[in-house]
Length: 212
Image (cartoon, rainbow, N blue to C red):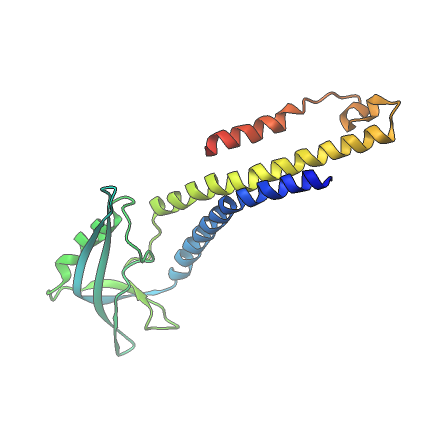
């Protein structure tokens, strides 16, 4: 590989690095979300008393509004009383679906009431608890969209360029090795085949167009 070609690939790699990083981070969030969901299935369900419940809203300059349900609740586990504020596995405010508003509408009637709700307690660490342990498919799809678009652009385009460069270098080396035998300049020609090399270029172009 020439210095110029290596420099071009290096510049393109630096350009695609942020996209690959975002895709990798989103993929990590997907795995973390699914792992947390699986782990919490072994947590024990116990009665909980909702002390306070609030629905916070935050508006941005674009006119969008995000919501976050906060709560404080008490529960007793193995004759010990605990207090917690963890509502769900998603700690930030968001406007993906109506999850935040739905859970607020569900738990708010229990505050200042003798009725008990439920929470899930980690048996090995009773101070850890949560009101909602379920996975949010809307959030998983949101993460997946970013992982596919950014990760696909970052890894897919650069990987495609590496493969294209590899075949180009191999073709050049075969041309030098067999100057008087043009049918040996490509591996498919040497096998009696004639494949269209534009397929890889087309795939790279489609990925680029989708990302843009």
